Length: 193
Image (tube, rainbow, N blue to C red; front, side):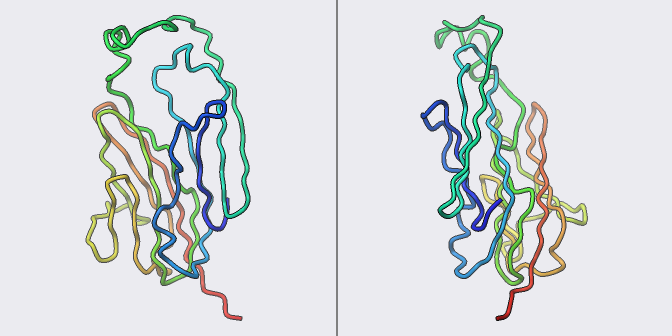
């Protein structure tokens, strides 16, 4: 959790394996007091022995950095020496797999009147379709005025108000299945000093 909302990256040992996942366009709002609790997960489809290693998640907000490490142990040693052709023939590479949301905010707070961007980054093959559902259980349509959904899953809500408060659900789906996450948006009154 942080203000500004944290960015997150995953590393295998010291090698970065994901891009810097963040709220990319929020810097357009100057003087914004946004606070978010973000979540990220690293998805490894078809775990092979070569994936056994130490993985580290690094979150950064302003000048603060925090990290957590996990050791992945693979007990099945089959597949260690598979070459590209063998991986394709075993239907490991290029296979259809479930969509998974990899980066989202479970809670997002910002000042009434500001534009906000709720992230919903994902993986999946074939590329998943993204659907956002508002607090009233209605599918959000990109209207260009109040709401817009980007190709990478972000929901932009313009000029938030009290009536925008509540849980927003991001659903990603493809022919292999679906995944969903929820973000609770809390519009705040701007403090007067």
